[in-house]
Structure formats: structure tokens, C-alpha cells
Image 1: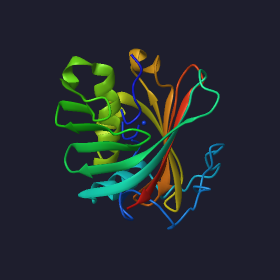
Image 2: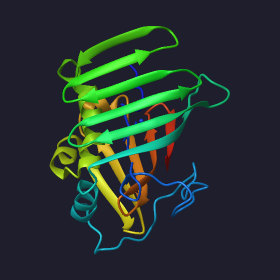
Image 3: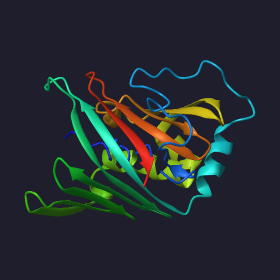
Length: 216
């Protein structure tokens, strides 16, 4: 079962929001081609004064956020990347919504343990519990934990590597669970301060999803 990356980031981390607090960016800092391009390389330097606890504290101060996203899925089976665009919404403590507006209308909503999927284009709607799929739970919790500043939950599911400084950081999450690692090798979130600019999900087979985020 392939995990749709918002479940990337919002389920594909999401990463990831805010208006200078949460997932966000836009014409603001680190213009990235999105401050960090698809060939992005993590900063080789590390600011010892900027630790995971500092990032988590900064993220935990964001009560809610709404952002726009563009997601490019690079799949071996496709000659060109599949591009999606839409909105992301986060509300503390555990509500996340990814609403794809183009090239079709599709919505993923997670609140508590319940996941609701709706595709208006195909007139489909279904829901399920995160408890029924531990792999998806781990993925969703990685995004929610990052946005909520919950380091304990992140450490339960991932090997964590934070690079850079407050002005330009990269958070790499490598799954500890063998079943999840079969589908996702690394989730990389990058940003500045409490703002997440980009979420990249790398899959073992070479496919990846790159989500860039901007304030609404």
C-alpha cells in the first residue's frame, strides 16, 4: 500500500505550515528557488545553540495555520512529475487537512484517530481509523508531532538529525519501524525559525515527493 504523501506532508511531513510560525513561506525568507532546490543539500554547518528542543518549542507556539502547497511527485513509472496543488490546514492539537484543488478535487482530513478521504471528482468518500494501519499512524504522527513540537513522539518513530541554524535548518527523519522503512526511507523538512518551507519524502525505490509551501 503506497502512502500518499500528505500521509507528506502533510501526510508527504507533512513535513509541514504558518505565517512565520508553522508551515509556510512565500515571498518571505529563503526564497528557494524555494530556498532549497530539488537538489537541496543539507547545510554542512551546525549551530550548537540551535537544538531539537529549540525547534520543538518554536513549533509548539503555533496554534493553527493555513497554507498553499505545490507538490511534485517524481515516480519512475512517469516521464514527467505529477504536480498537485491545493491548501494545507493545521489546528492544534491534532487536526490536519490536505485539500488538493488541482488537477482534481481531493481532500484528506485527520483528526484524532480518524482519517477521512474524499474525492469529489470521482464522488468517493471513505474513512478509517489510524489504529487499523500502524504505518500510516507513524507517518501522520510524524507530521503532527513536528507541527505540535512533540519531540517525544518523533523520537518514538524516527531517527532524528537536525542540521543548520535557526535561520536555515533541515530536519531529517529516518523511520525506525521496518515496515514503514519499506515505503519511506527519509522525510526531510526544511525551513527557518518556525516556518517550514519544504517537505521531501524519499522512497527506497528512488521515487520522491517534493512539497513546497507558501502562506495564503
